[in-house]
Figure 1 (cartoon, rainbow, N blue to C red):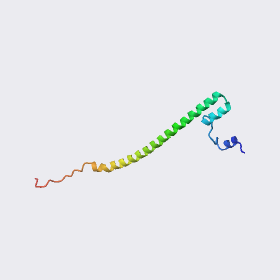
Figure 2: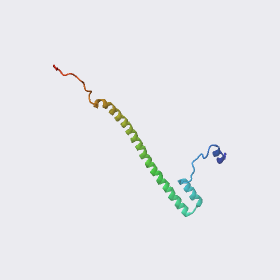
Figure 3: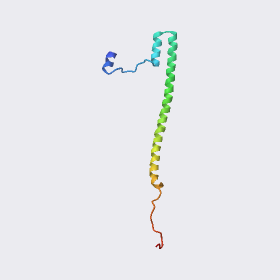
Length: 106
């Protein structure tokens, strides 16, 4: 087996994310401390992390939908800009023609 500290130093640091300040870390602390208060707090922390994860997932869905709407709006803006550029020559007043009136004019 390889030493984890040596392997991680040779490859530029930790190769896995730490379990500190996650629900896994709270469960590990509760297992080590084995007191009633530690168990209650670990359950509280785990529930808080679960609630936070649910909120983040809900927000992630909303942000994904907003990104889709934004992409559609950008496409519509481009199309409307193209239509506006094409209509500009048609909306301009016609050039004035200096034509002579019919008939005899001294």
